[in-house]
Length: 165
Image 1 (cartoon, rainbow, N blue to C red):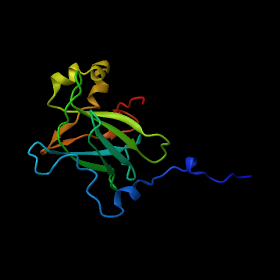
Image 2: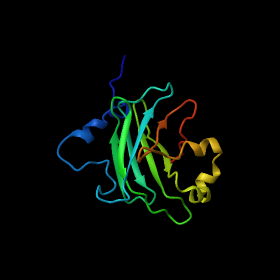
Image 3: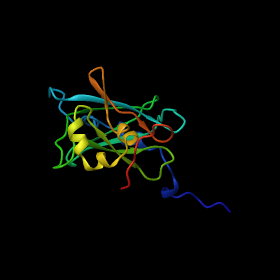
Image 4: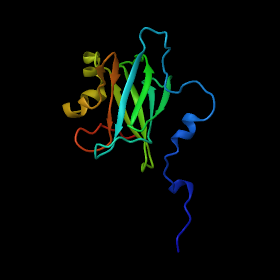
């Protein structure tokens, strides 16, 4: 006998429903377009085989939890945000907390994005400094053509460090 599926057993992707229905302001803009300190944060969500995840969602939170946004991934696994550098908590480096939702995941994953021009603050950050060099390197965005690039690799070589939550 086969039991019917319940919502808790059904894995999406359902993310496009909340991202594309009805008129609303863009959910991926955490900064004002007119702010000279705003920058595009772009990236790609990649699975363990190196294949782009086309039906994922990335949520971005500033380090103090005041601003957040979300971006679905496109057919190439790409996501994008407009951001400004957040104010850090005392003792922490400026960063974004990132939640990743993707097919086959019953629970989201948590990671962080640190800024490439904050080497001193990054080195003093207690979470950053507790990681080995390979782990740290997966958490820093890279400058690319006037934007910041941050790819998220779910598994495999060079996979992004994820944290318990």
